[in-house]
Length: 65
Image (cartoon, rainbow, N blue to C red; front, top):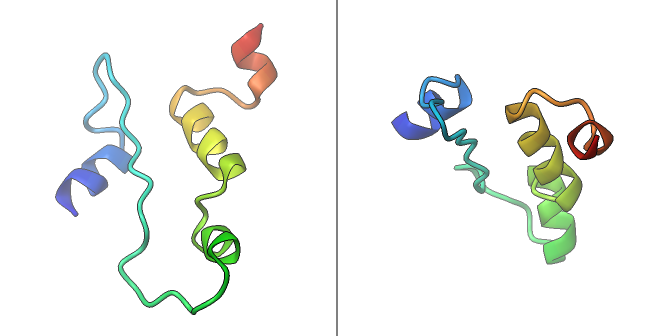
């Protein structure tokens, strides 16, 4: 929990940016795995958005340019 807090606040950023993406510490309703992933924000789109945000980018195009 401490590492996650520090990472989300950017306090561990040096040459390496860390943004933990984990299942939340709460009950997740039973459903298909795909729907559970959407509910907790761990889809591919969510992962890309988190990575781009950590890099200070708005879109994939900004990274490729």
